[in-house]
Image (tube, rainbow, N blue to C red):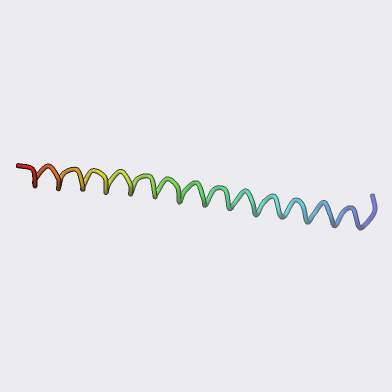
Length: 53
């Protein structure tokens, strides 16, 4: 295997690792945003129920 091909493979592996880390981070952020959305939707529901009484 040529040196150039080895370098390309190493670069591709590193890029794949970076992208996998990014995917994990984005999934974590999505979970946080989903939880926050549910929390605030519940809070707003509670506030509107109080106002309608």
